[in-house]
Image (cartoon, rainbow, N blue to C red):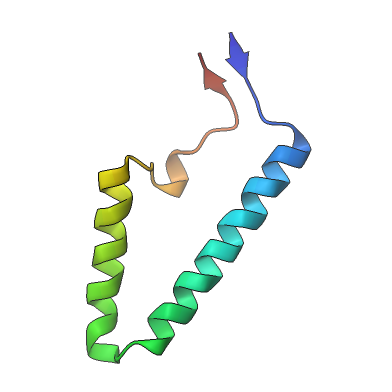
Length: 64
């Protein structure tokens, strides 16, 4: 079985992802410059621990 998101689903994911990135960017800007890298590394570790694939690993079709 192959599953693929609809156009509406792809737009929803794109919108949510962009909003999340904008929020993270605002948080990074609000930190002290010398601490911003700590925040970025922490987010990367959190994403890895949660099993979230990097954005370049998201595919349009998923084999089930």
